[in-house]
Length: 89
Image: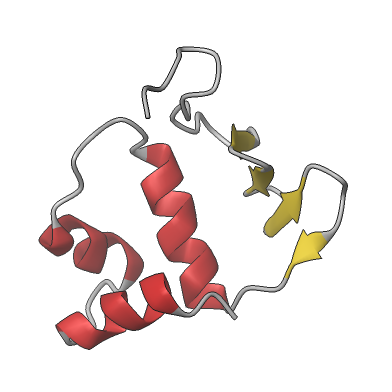
């Protein structure tokens, strides 16, 4: 499926909301919502992973960068990322 510029995710700038697909990520409020306004429950680290990836929209994000940004000064295994990716709540 080809993305158009109109529906491609745009990197977050500051605390502005980011729309992708049928979702809106609002870092200022710390929420992920569907376009109909229904909030999606996320664990805090899962939200941080999503926020960081939204900030890097359109770029390849190395696992090491994600670990450094979301889990600074903490040793975590690769399972930490896989778990956040696979289970949003």
